[in-house]
Image (cartoon, rainbow, N blue to C red; front, side, top):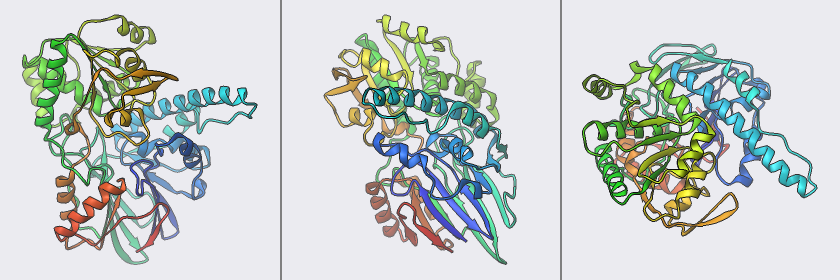
Length: 464
């Protein structure tokens, strides 16, 4: 049995791990690498293996850094099943089509610039049609339900607590008569996140593949973050400004909507207008409402007590059309605008930043991790100017960062996760984390006597 670390090794994005056993090949995740634009196209376009030889994909969740290169995999010859939980399959449908649309739009813009330089056009990584074809290969499997993607391998999904339908993946493998077990964490959520249930801890496994995105820091508790969020909204409201929130369309947007629902329902803030301005987030919110059985006890209690859904309330408007989005720029009263993308790289959030970042009454609220070389990261690092659509804008709005709203576990819970298999596990492989975070986390593992562990390099192969 071999595993090759084809993505999210010594970096956070592009989750992809190739497992070879008994002549079969399985892929855990197939995500897009996101980072410096000059690097991403070639890295995402080319696979280190022949997609035609992959027997099945097992998908942890729908976020694009875990699922976003599936259409390219299918385009290049993969024809097997893509196993995922029902919400992940449903979310994947809209997210991959949206990603295909972005690929087509971005390449159209690139080709205009190439044409001016006399350079030949390039093709998109994949198209909407490619995404539709990939979605047809989804095979939904419930939590705790056993399935066998290839002979000799039994798989179960367990709640990962990260976004709706996110899963940790356990593989029990008969490797030429020897039993071996592997647990892939996917993205590890938190025990106190709103809306969804807490992560299931791993147990009784030989090998653990686990993320370490926040291995170097602990978050505020969600309640502490909730309090900071409330203070930020109230402060901006009092000075007559807008709160602009770049947020991932799936997961983060719905959590923020739920927070605002709570604040308004409990009289903590006035019923100021709240706009969700992202077509993908609007569709994703509809999907969240299709799966109330995946909500946690707290959310269901809130719905019962307040007699309205968690993701709908009177002050909330889901924006659909471009015209409605543009009209927000002509409104000058206090409001909250939640818009994608979460790292402020593409989409309608760029227009809202362009129109609001120079007003000191406004607040730009950063509520999640920002990748290097993104507009969101520059805001976090205190940039005084931003280049948006080729034009420079001075950052006069207040920028506030609330780390406690992250859907990723902080250092303490990551330690608890690894400790759950200590004494039994033969090796812990740390993935999905930058080097500073992983180095700090490895020091903590050593300090707590947890291990052995390894931090693989991209394209490393290990044999068990």
